[in-house]
Image (cartoon, rainbow, N blue to C red; front, side, top):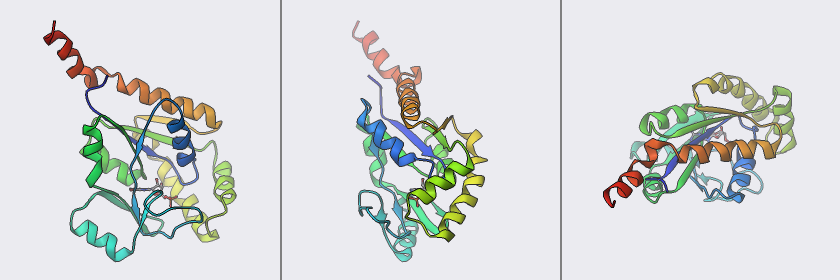
Amino acid sequence: MSTKGLLVILSGPSGSGKDTVLDCVHKRDIPIQRSVSMTTRAKRDGEIDGVDYYFVTKEYFEKQIKDKNMLESALYSSNYYGTPKGPIDRWLAENKTVVLKIEVQGAEKIKKIYPDSVSIFIMPPSMQILEKRLRGRDTDSEESIRMRMDAALGEMQCAEKYDYVVFNDVLEDTVDDICAIIKAEKFKSSRMKKSVREVIKNA
Ligand code: 5GP
């Protein structure tokens, strides 16, 4: 039993496999609540509005920032991405494991707001493999692939600022690693204080 929810920040270059990893983690014995971000980028084939992202116009996004409805936001490959403020605290109060899949600027902002969050950086095994994965998903233009490869180099330089770094080479191993991190974090004594005190109080 933990005293309150756990906020997990997951970052890594576009194409590092964050979504696939999270889908697999959710199918294990670790239920996670994924935050749905807002973005101004175009919807890819197969993506669903309200599930993968809230796809909005630049004007709408800027109004959300102005009205202070975003927990954080960042520009990435010329598009806005951001975390809507509303549900995060409610989910944490409900004791959930909340996962934010965000890029490095957003991760830094969230870590400042929630210092007890856990940040994990997913590394591709190599730049060659990253490029192959980006091309393999067949959803991005050549220009977008180039921008994402350039962004990846900058992002990987921030990996050392994260609490954990996991190389996504063999998917099942990566999923094991992420599950192990989440499980261990939940049992940190700092998160168990309330439960321990309750037992002592009722002794
Ligand atoms: P993609 O276009 O590949 O879906 O996402 C591009 C990058 O934006 C990824 O690194 C992804 O993690 C990041 N991203 C997605 N949602 C958010 C968000 O709400 N805030 C921030 N800061 N980055 C996000």
